[in-house]
Every structure is written in C-alpha cells, then in structure tokens.
Image (cartoon, rainbow, N blue to C red; front, side, top):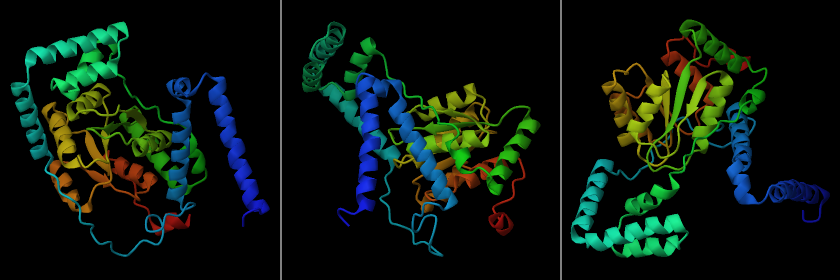
Length: 328
C-alpha cells in the first residue's frame, strides 16, 4: 500500500498535526516551560478520557475486554509478594547500614549536598559522594528538599470529554439522574477522593476515573501521587468525602488499602465507602472484601457502571445494567 493516497494522506495528517504541537512548544519557550504550564499532560488526559469513553461504548474494540469475552476466564498465576515482610526486611537493612557506616563522614557529605543546593554546586557529584559514605536515597533527597522543597503532583481532571462522548446515552443519563437524586438527599454533591498510594507512578487510569466521575456529577478530589495510607485518609477527612476510589497498579493493594481503611475506622469514619480499581488479581478480591473494600473494578470495567455501583453504595437505588437499558 506504500504510495497509495490513503496511506500518504494519513501520514501527512499525522505530520501536520504533530508539527502544530512542535511549533506551539517552540513558541512558548521549549518543552520544559510547556510541561510546567501543564498543557501537554492535559492533552494526554483528554485523549485518554476520550479513548476510555469509546471503549466503554464499544466503539473501540479491545478483544477479550469489551468484546468477544470468554464465558469463563482462567485465573492467571501471579507472584505472591508479602509486602509486610519485604518492608520489614528493608527497614532492617537500612538499620544495619546506618549502624555500620562512618556517621561523621556521612553527615558531612549530606551537609555538603545541602550547601551545594544553596550555592549552585554540582549536585550529582555531591550526591554520589554522599552515597559513597552510605547515605540512603531518602537522606540524599531530604538534604536537597531542605533547599528546594518537595514537588507536589496534584492532577487536574479534564472536564467535558467523557460527557460529550455519552451525549444522548440512556444509561449515562440514568446515572447522572442518580447523582442528582443523591445530591438532593444529601443537600450537596456526593464527594469522592481518587487516591494513589505507595510507590506507584501510574496515574492515567486514576485520572480517567476522576474525569469521568466529574462529568457524571460527582465532586472529585484527585489525590497526589505517592501518598501514604495515612495521608490519603487525612485528605479524605479534610474534604469530607463519601467514598474513596483507591487505584492500584503496583501490587500494593493487599497492604495499602486495608491500612487506609484502618485509618478511617480509627478516625470514626467507617461510613466512608472504599472501592478499589486497577490491576488486582481476582484471587485477591475476597481478601480485600474481608478487609472492608466494598467495590472492586478490574481491567475492562465499564466506568459508567462503576459510577452506578458507587451510587448504590451511597444508598441510592440504581438498577444494574439490564437488557431493556441495553436496548435503549
């Protein structure tokens, strides 16, 4: 097909649209400034939300996920990692490192790193020197944080993309009406926190959920990356949320989510519903439910149906997707 009008026109369209973005980056002072302004990430989030809406509607087919699914799926064997055991082992290793290193030289190297951050020194060289004296990664980061502070990542959900894709859809409108009914009952919009805990930098799925739920009518707070369960619980309490959606893509679900629920219970807020989504093996579902998770949505879950399920948890009688709605 090389040389055909069809292929050449698509290639030219790709080049032209890519060049528009490149020229915009150049006109605004380079990629670093564009990233700081946030618009490249916003474009990515809009594309991701639009893609998920098309998948949910069946317009984009993913074989085995939203079409041609098997009647029964075989469980995949997954490596079971005892996170608590790994954590305790790492704590013991750090304790041994600190007890066996030359603490005076290590502190001097860390102080030099802090001073270099103040004066514009070679931070890579100073960090390597601190590592030679067995400073830990956390200590090296802390030495620079004293001067630079810590970068905070607070995602901003895109709005309107998901709702536009579902314009005129009967089931979507039914869920939107359900949110409005809950709003009338509560006297305010239902509030939800989308939480990203642990060393899990994958936030695309969490941001899509935040965008979709915002369009459906929820008041959504998107938590920053790398939160501890205690920080997530505190953010939930500060925002007086009704539900928390915990996104997990790094196998920390059996440790982080139960700990989050424990903090909520300790604060007397066991009424806050906790649901979980992401790549969670089905064989772990019972464990999470016993820990207090009230909804689990794995890959292939329809986001509109997830929202309907959350409404049911909040006490609104949302009927499940039925044949009469599918027909509509």
